[in-house]
Image 1 (cartoon, rainbow, N blue to C red):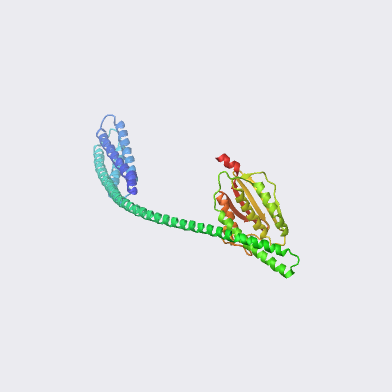
Image 2: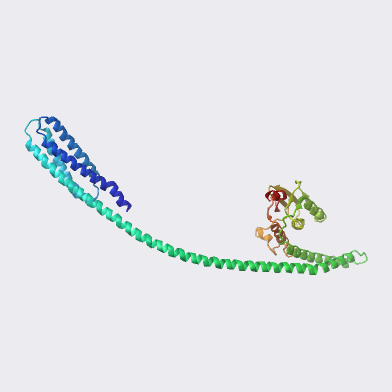
Length: 415
């Protein structure tokens, strides 16, 4: 359709216009021939020459556009008529003014009539060609409209079917998600209840047993073998107590933070460091805190203490087996609306295959003691306080655990 329309605009209409103008100019030439016998013959010969040139220009325009096979026959007839006219007109114009030239004028007039007839035939052929192209374009448009209507109907049906399918899939997905959430919440509640009951039921008697073994171990009259046995029993009890403490912390870690919760980061950090200094010195670990500005976070003191204590104890514990640098450093950096706390250690680092799975339940590093609830508890506590937690490798070996919590002054400003 575009190609046919282009032919109509580029060839059809201009060619018809050139042929019509050529007929008009030829009629003017015929009129000039009839007046050639007037006294002012030179002027009349000039008009004849001008009319001939006008006819030639219009025919040249037509021949430039007559490129289709349908134009070959009428264009050939028109060329022959034009050539005869040019030849005979040249002879007429060469005749001196005032000399008898009636025969030459009649021949040229006959050539003009022949040219006009050939131009009319060519114009009729071009009009028929244009009409055919127009009919083709109209037919193409009708077929396109039918195809478009069919495609539109198909699209409507397809969209309706897709909409129904999408609705069903969405409903099924929502039902699955809801069921999974209910299952997860149920299991989480069961786990919380289980952890809390286990911790409550066995912690008290274990503490009593530990105290009794400690008293017995300090009696000087007992033999070294008995002392060693009691020491091993005490170590076993400590491991069991550590497990129950993990269960208890995990059970308490799901509570959401209160809007009024506030903790002084410096007070919590220095309190935990003071508590763990003896343990760090016993394990030959250098425990340090980089100077930082006073800051408060939107978090309960108990939750912040539990998270930092967990991370610091974990860092000191995993320093065993390291023979070179044995350092644990605490770094606190207020950052706009957040306070970032980093625990950096020079330990063995986290294996690449673990990644963020260290924060999942029951994930333990090699040689770890316990149920693998420590980091899972820390993550649960931090997220309950609307914070973030993660880790990255330390340059030179080791790990940097980081915690970000909302800063209290930023929280007030936002409120």
